[in-house]
Amino acid sequence: MSHDITSVLPPFLVRTVLGFGLGILLGFAARRGRFCTVGAIEDVIYSSDRRRAGAWVLAVAVAIIGVHALELWGGLDLSRSIYTGSRIEWGGAIIGGLLFGVGMALVGTCGFGTLLRLGGGDLKALVTFLVMAVTAMVTMRGLIGMARVRITDPLTVDLPHSMSQRLPGLIAALTGWSGLTVAIMAMALGALVGIAVFASGGLSRAALKQSLSAYAPGLAIGVIVVLGWWATGIAGFDVFDARRVESFSFVAPLGDTLLYFMLSSGVRPDFPVGAVLGVVLGACLAARSAGQFRWEAPDGAGEMRRHLLGAVLMGVGGIAALGCTIGQGVTGISTLSVGSMLSIASILVGARVSLYWLIER
Image (tube, rainbow, N blue to C red; front, top):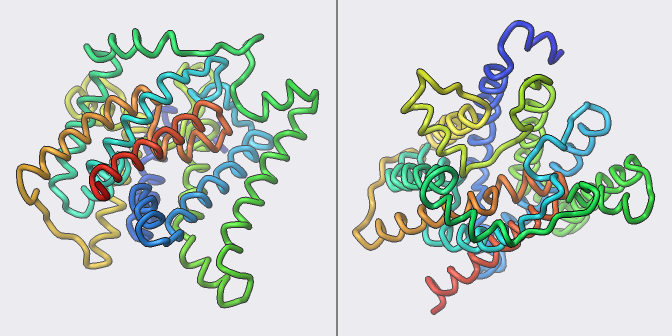
């Protein structure tokens, strides 16, 4: 099927269109389901409400199952992603993750949440988007990038024999088990985590029905992330194209989108650009259908300063950590990458410290 599509349309256009369509679904599901990492952390800390955190964990569990199924039976080559190399950039993951976590607490959401807010008419989110996009590009390819490389490059670990940093690969190398066995174990782990999330509210019929309602956004987002891998690694895959296989992430793609709007005559769109635009449209559709769309401006200079600083920290930190709460937290962890686990753990720590400073102190 993928060969039929790419024989009609160029692979980059297939990926862009699929990214746009899946982005609409992702934006709609997340906006309607109030899917937000910062909100989930705040709910757990300040109201002992674990529903949004459970939805986030369920999204990860579903993504783990789906990605390993695609790898085993769909032909997905995860070695072409940024998450699976033999070099563990632990310095970038930790430093960048902490910066990103602090930044998203200052803003009140991450890069993905910024797009959801923008779709609802929040003009603060527009400023955050633009600042974060520019900062991401400067950190990737500009002046900040040189400092980033000098700081984080020495803080790496190179695995022997070009081993993958994915847990399945490491376990297979240490135990001698087959890749099939370890991949099935990974899928079983994802299934157990998903079952535990659903069963956390009780096993009665009413409790399970309530859990399904609360955790449905996480289920949907996990499936959409898997479809993102399918879009770039199977449906829109071109063996002669050096572009990496990927799914949803919202740091560098914000810069890619801004760059495309500025230089569209000389830059081709791809999955990230389609995904960013699709998420904004999907969030807009969700907000309008729920009667929640309204134009919002900053309340004052203090709030604007907080958003500007948060956007800069997310742009710098997200590039150093190679992703955000979606890019590393769901997409990256779906591959069971060690680097992704370090990044998301650091992001959560940074957010917790920042929330303490902003609210509790």
